[in-house]
Amino acid sequence: MLFRFSLFFLIAVLGFVSQACFARNQEFQRPNTFIGNAGWSGALEIWVECGEMALGKGEAIPLRFQFVSDGKEFGGGFDLGWWCPFFEGRTITRDGNLYVSTLGGDWRFLKSNSNGGFSSMDGKSTATANGDKVDLSENGWHYEYAQGWIVAATSPQGTRLEWQYADNQLSAIRKDGLGWLDIERSNHGLLARWDGMVLRFSKEIRPGGWVWNITPPTGISRTFEVRQNLGVTEMRASSGKLPISKFVWESNSGHLLSDSDFTYKMQPTDLGKQILHRLDQQGGSEWYDYDRNQGLAIYKRQDGCQVQTWYHLEAGPTYRKPFQMDTFTSDYRLISSRRLIYSKEGDIEKEWTEPGEAVFEADGAVQFVGEKEAIRLHGEKGVLFVDARKQWEFERGRIPGAVLLSREHFEENFPELEKQLRSADKLVIYCTSRNCEDSSLVATRLAQLGFPCVLVFEGGWAEWWKRHR
Image (cartoon, rainbow, N blue to C red; front, side):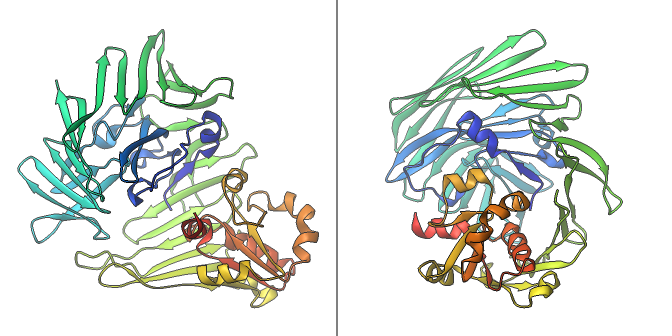
């Protein structure tokens, strides 16, 4: 689990979420908006999703902008910068390896291999290089780069896009050999037109700072106002009459100091290391640490629970990871242990979850079920599904008939739901996906409160939505 804290409240505030009407390739499934430690430095990083660019044949590419306060990972400065991956796909060679950006906004790390090419650790992204040209293939997409910049991309359905540059800046994109997207640039921003759609992006210099304005093809304009004073940079993000979100970071280091809900500080952990902490208004904190030598990731939550994840790299081009993800209570009792074993081809060969000692008070009460069993249980009388996610996630989509009992508001919401929960024969708890531990934490708490049959649907909303969308 990366130390990237979701800012989905910002999505709701600024209305960034686009209503998808096309099939999304796996490449474009990353979060719409998040804050994180860009380059492991605790810098501000926000993604703004402004809509989708239809390719035809049921395909579309999300139009995304990135704002980041620390660009040193790939040669930038420390003030706030912006990047649109669709306009500026890049590739960088470092220490004989490749760093490549794709249209979805992800950076791929590809290590040189014995065949003279490059491959990702999971083996699903491969590349070849010839002089200043790089060809990348992944998830059905094929990307072509020259002199460090993207020049062409072919979708899984065969749609071909070709980038055209003028004065080292993107001026147009052709689709299947025909004109498609045009860009007009000025000293104050750019104007992009495609398929009757228009996007405006402008920058205005003001005393002590500057302002970015984004006007998407549909929806409300968004404003990002930046000011610098005494070594500190502040950004205020707003949209129409909606509340303003505020972010503050150090100008010299790019390190994030605060956002609308949290503050951030470098301070020691109970491991004795100096690590960036995120603190809430009540003084609770969480942090993340990854020891590359041991292959051990530790995530300390605000509620005191600790998640440990062990990684293992074996020799050879394939990323094989006998994988273990342990979730602990605040007093370090094991709640559950998630296990995976990968085949030589890099596919999951076996996956299972083992209950821990934290549920010994109700021996065998917590069990883990897969997608098929969850679907069967959903039609069974006396079964109640319980959603352990956040309120905004629950409102955007949930398993039919589920009730909300989030991990972070468990104590305050349980009393009003207790009668309904007690009337059920079985409770099925789920959260976001297999990588989310909230369902195990809520299930364990219910088991400790004496519920006789508590099940955890491991695949959660991600698997349910994929099956029923």
